[in-house]
Length: 416
Image 1 (cartoon, rainbow, N blue to C red):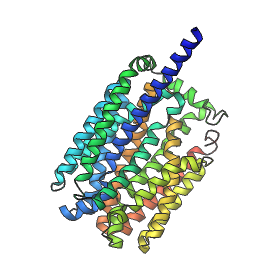
Image 2 (tube, helix red, strand yellow):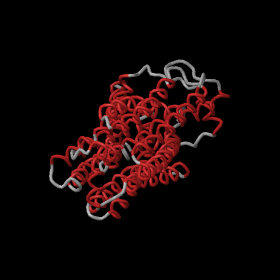
Image 3 (spheres, rainbow, N blue to C red):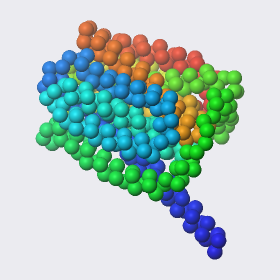
């Protein structure tokens, strides 16, 4: 009888943990969906509001600036320990952001306000989701923020492109649809968090480890069952992990923030779906690559990213959409591995609260670099044309990937 009661209790606990992690992951993915909705319709905003290429990339970058500021705040405060409150609040902010973006169809100031609020919501949601996922799922939840970011980005791009192409009001209808979805997700999340409140309270209790403890845990990390690197190499490995994340996510600054406008200019296509093909292909490949290319190594990933950057330059120079999309497939394969792998490396051995803090710091650095690269490339493209902007990004990616390869040489954990 006692065993039966214990079994039922364990099953109930597993069910609560699973429902809570799924609700948190779904809510976070929808936040990222919202952050990517404007990307396919940026060419429409540019034409309707008479925006320059620099202003278009600035709209992308202001979102990243808000993200970085929020990530930095989360990483330096106790907000990660209040994840059960922060995540629902972030979904509420996401809905307010949608309202501002909806109002931005005829006023660019509202677009900037909406993008800032979207960045705030996504920034709060990233750390909170990482904390809840590790608290509920342990090691299985270690890279959930990276997975949710990629999946939400892909769904946001595809959904926005389809809605804008086939439904009336291409710059308004999609936001109303997103508000409805987020409202449903918020209700489900609140129910799941209430049912898991006791489990969360227990899991989130405890002090943060010191830097020495983090280094020790990273030095004994087992990615595929084989001990990782020696403790004295952990700091260099951690920087290599950050470099992987930067190389992976900075791709989005080019493909999502700039390529739709570049493709519209170079190919002259009026189709929203055609101009959004590059980011859709990129993120589709990124979502699949961790499952299809499980045996990929870090050295191969950085080579793929660097080669794809050069192909992107050649594709834009020739005005060849097929070559641009091939580049995006390769970039997606590299991005899907690099961002998630980098996150696993820099958060190895951390508890739930510290997972949220370090995941926020990691994202802050990656998004910050991405914002600088996007704005700089957009400025160069405005001054010297699309090819000039692509030359800059190629040089940056080749240099970055070479640096990451040197940092991680003979130090990557087993299986990475």
